[in-house]
Length: 498
Image 1 (cartoon, rainbow, N blue to C red):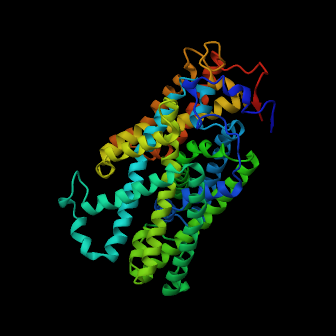
Image 2 (cartoon, one colour):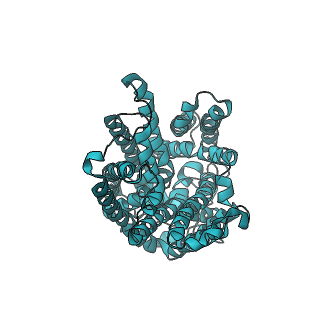
């Protein structure tokens, strides 16, 4: 990698239009994260209640153990490769996701993917906080059974019990506290949270295996009829798609974190350790732990919070419960707090700081009353089906724009000017090709996620909505740029290239 001029030049700072910049959106001067920090980021993404359930669910699809292993490896390697792709433009330039999109969508048009991504994050931030709070309620009731009357919804307000509000408020404040102290505080939290879950998971697995006996442990958690090889192929493909879809949010957001890395090599090493290596080991621990719950508790338990709540030792219960809650808080911060902070700050940099953007997302998540929204299948299907269906197209367009059309060239200073003669002004600040590619890819992607469930036919298509959107976005943007080019790469002044 080489840079003809530094991404941040002292003389260029004064030339940045204030409508496009603040201290959080300009290129970083200090990129100091190493491979371990990227590794820890992925540990926080994987080591959550959702990650536990996702990994465990693959072993209950009727597949043989080796087929599940193949699906896990293929799925997580795809995630690793895509993360390396989305990481590079932000790491090379030192800018977050919404800013690098100015080189693709235009200096004004970049607000389109920013608002879409921020809206998705608000929804999931509330849901993840709610799910973690419900886990906290289980732990609280384990130690203070007298609180049970407060856990009844009929005594609550707007669909949530008093104890539910207390648990939600505790986690909402805790997440806000960590976030408010900035990226370095978040980095320290993430560096600690991921390994902490490993320690607890290993101890939990050892405890349950010792109670069950190794002879009673099976790596096959399938509860359905075993599938023959031909029938297992589409199920394996669906399992691969499930792994990729689960990580689709963090994949799109990854540039917000890769910008802090010392080098792209550090990012690639961290991704390798944090994704294939970490995910497979975590999945193995998940299966061993879940398998041991059958002989120990008489039933298969795939929720780690419920598992630790069944343990008689109070210390083990509170340690395990709080650790998994902490892990879920970790993924919520890195996946659903930091990203909307950048997105909403990007809309109006001078009036909305990074911290203010994050708090907008946090407050919005409460106003959404996620406990009601999440329990309404129709609401969650339509809202996330529409917004989530655009994650794939936005990913495909960014990758096509940076690697194919721009040939990995970005004029950093040009992303901070509102001049009509600026390189990324395009048409009134918008690149029409990127806008149309979003529409062209977004409509089929959304339809593939919603229509099959509405008509009750071909539901398997929904598993591939991310791939459909990503592929169509990639192809549509390249085709439109070849037909009526907007992005120019012939000039050589002030560029960052790899």
